[in-house]
Length: 287
Length: 334
Image (tube, each protein chain N blue to C red):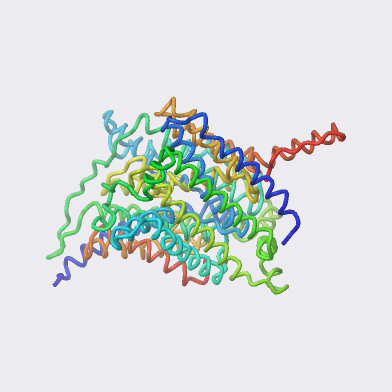
């Protein structure tokens, strides 16, 4: 019989993993919702943030400073990708753009994995250890609590940004109606660039949080992309709130299955859940 | 059946003749014979994907997974039933066909868009590869096992032709058969229905076309071909492990081949396969940068060459005809 305190601890870990998934899924939702671009390279931005941070920490930079600097670096790289590669993708329209976007970002992730593999062949874990937090009989893993706090803050800021600011309103207008947005003076390309840069920064942060509890290698880039896609699609692909809910749901499914059955079956159950939700969800068919 | 099938059949005949003689300069060289087998297997997968994706907009991103099911099912059934893999191959094909059928049925019934089908099938791909790795007692897990099925030694002894060359010709027969199935489908009533569905599903339904049935047919045929091809793919590799069927190893390559060769063209998958396998060999000289160069090439090809080589050649021939109207050019295209 599993004790209540153990169930609470597992739930906290599940929530932490779910929030990381939510962050990843949000990056896909934002970019796809705005420009119908499915960014298959998004997971690699998360991995690049982890690698940059690890390299800086190894060279004596503090973890917080290195994390911030790596996110700035990822933002700069995202900006370059957007202004070069994605500008070519945005020349296409409609379904053609979707396909060109899929194949171009697929090429980008294959390119980055191949190129970076020459310099960073190892696995990386960030040296974060908050220690355990004891509340009564329940012992929580400190890193999980830290992940929940940081990702809640990030998602909160993101939602406020989208709800309150002019930039957020412009983004939501573009989500709804591109022609209408143009008519009221919104420049879609500029908003798309900002959102793309924002998305890779969020992916970078998700990567850093993920690396607090798991090792990350260049091969993880593709796995994180797939997780991001699954969460976004299960959440409805155009809904940030839906994406966050889907992330938390899949996080719970994965961690509980992991605890009660085992990691291999947990992954299988995660994918089966995603397939089942995709099958029964009504809204996702309206992509 | 539409009359345009005859020029397409001639093209298939032309490429078959060409491929029949392809191994002759490399007799005795097992490396190049393996390479030629690889060209045919990738082309076979690409023809199948052309049916599902090219003609009915079902972007199957589980070619690797289906190929894996075909390969594992053929071997495991042969072992457990104690019969030859030649007998279990059709069962494996039927099994993968049913996976494609169910997937297409769900996607068509739920009116999935191309993106949703892509993610749906990609999730299946990960599910399959995870199962290949995790079900160690059945599949051997990441250790794998030697894939010594489809014994050809009796025929090899009798004909004095090496097993590698025999396997090449078996693959060629399978590829030609697949191309004929493709042509029969595309130039029949189903093909007309495919065209109508691709243009506008609602309009197609309004004129009495059964969208679900036609998509399911395309899904079943494509998946069954991939399953059968998967068994030969493992036989050609001679050892079976889960990474052999990963998304990056199979799906990315097959997609590139199909797009470079030309979607909805008869010979595009073969032309694309020859080009991409050739490019992979050129890049083999820089093994550490192979992945990066392949990725860069992928981006370049999709951005600037996405209508395919076959279509580009056809356009060039049309231009030449305008300049030299009295001469005839008849280079095989799609």
